Image (cartoon, rainbow, N blue to C red; front, side):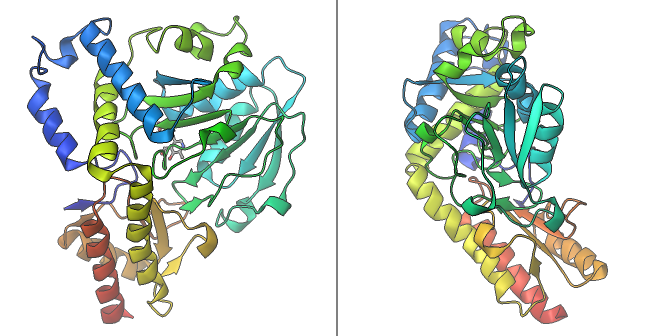
Length: 361
Ligand code: PLP
């Protein structure tokens, strides 16, 4: 079956097979990785390999630390303002384009002053703003946004405008490494792994080194970025299994896919198949996101009524197309086509959509 789950999501089959083959006894070692100390040189090398693969894919300079943390993306909703807002006289600017941005704002408000510079809630989050729709005060602690709102299926085509004086912070959880990214434009980019990068359990944080110094030493130790950077992500026991698999996915992106430009090309082709099926259905399918900010990762759309929607889901499952039910806040269908979804999967869904529309339209 092709699994269109929004997350945890599909992993490349070759990576899963490698994990299966190496799980009981790691090649070159005398135990399973699951039984190995995180201080063992074998694991430390695995951690550094994962970091280096991500650094080279995204072209990350030495001005940035790459951290492997736990607590999911949700802990970053709190860690970011705890480090960069708490105790300052500043306010933090947020662009709200969907459910995950909204949750991040709720957590940030517990830490300090929040300035929502753009809010797309009135449209049920069907778009992202253009540069002239908002302005960010130059003395903001940071500007935060979510590049791809997983539930609504809206994605920024390019990063928001942000004054040079303000660190730009991006939740890239559901589109991390889906295309090349100019990290030098950001203060911080972070992503939970379980959509595009690996299994649940690890969150990748790419943070500019000067920002490490802002968090107060009085924060709980785990919450201070600086501690993790100084300890090379071993301030406490890191999620060893998830980091191991993350490294394999990064190597798959490099060796099998050919890097992030090739990945972007493939992602555009996959998404194009689905959006073309929507646009050529004579109004049978209605996309949730405005065309200019349609997500390359999560295609969201509704059918004419609930009965047809149930029929769609059940016939799709019979055809090996599973986990397509949309989130209740948007309704309808959500097809998540992250990096590891093969083009054949997107093609199979697009063909099914076209046939279903002509039979039921
Ligand atoms: N941000 C985005 C864009 C997400 O898609 C998700 C999860 O779906 C989260 C944050 C929350 O991630 P976690 O469950 O790892 O805390």
